[in-house]
Image (cartoon, rainbow, N blue to C red; front, side, top):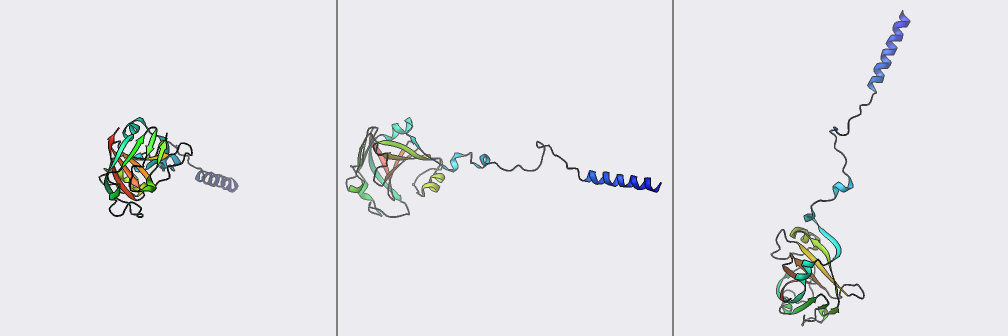
Length: 199
């Protein structure tokens, strides 16, 4: 009798022990534990938080706005990085000079007072190199403060290259198109607003 009682007690202890070690499997659809983030979920969905950096051809709307003869209308300011050949802190020798930007011809020879900025290209390659979707993303990327840039303004950086070498023109001149409504010239660390005088 004692042996039978002892055997029953042992069986009960073994069953109790086995039940304690049973793992509970939860339904993944009802689990309250957070799922780890995948790489895709880390990529920002809101393009306004950053600038898209890729070389692409000009879209038709930008082409229509960008081509023409432009006059340097006013000095907007200076970047904080360094001074340059454009007469810091006034930059006035650029004012009134002209730049020609056509589909089949580019000339910065109208920048009369600065020989180092004068260049001509036949059949130039125009490319958008970056697009910033608001003023904050533009400032974070370029560290340039363009006066009167509104928070929702879209800014496209445009590069001009020699078709034979595929290299950017060897002058320190860059262009920013704001909403296809403003053209900004960046000459090294100096920023100018341009005005279209002919299409």
